[in-house]
Image 1 (cartoon, rainbow, N blue to C red):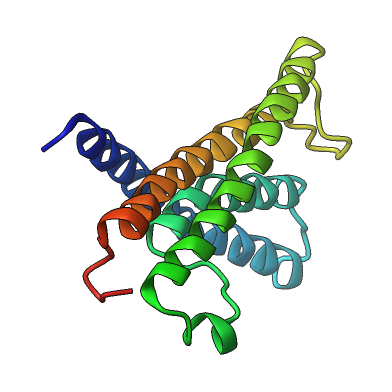
Image 2: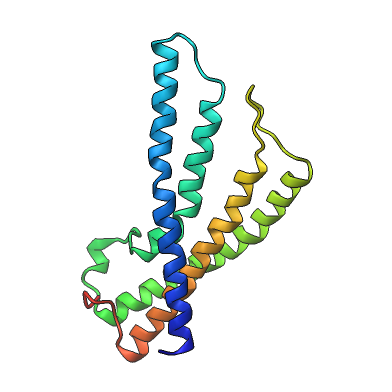
Length: 173
């Protein structure tokens, strides 16, 4: 196994493990929502912390789950056209898509890191009554974008292999 394949396996493994871990946040999110609904409508005492907690869990799911989403090939394609492409053309379309993602995520990592750092320096807090710090959530933006960037770079390498060496996934796509 070459160095590039080892690096690719590591990237896949990191995104797989983070994606699986973050998926459990859905259970926590459901628990927080249930707690709030029961507290508000049965006990007549709404919680001050549930909205911000929901935002944190949902933000973590969305921001950290992107690399897992790409790894599992759960991306949107225009199937009407894409399904009729030959394997090489599919690989080229995928490569161009992942290249656009790569560029976009590089900008998000850069600007997101600046924003997260600024938020950390001023110890930014939510404007709600609960007022939790916002900088941990803001820090997830560049981290999540970096995970997507890594997975997109790995997919570009895979697609180049498909174009030049006729390697595709196990489904032959």
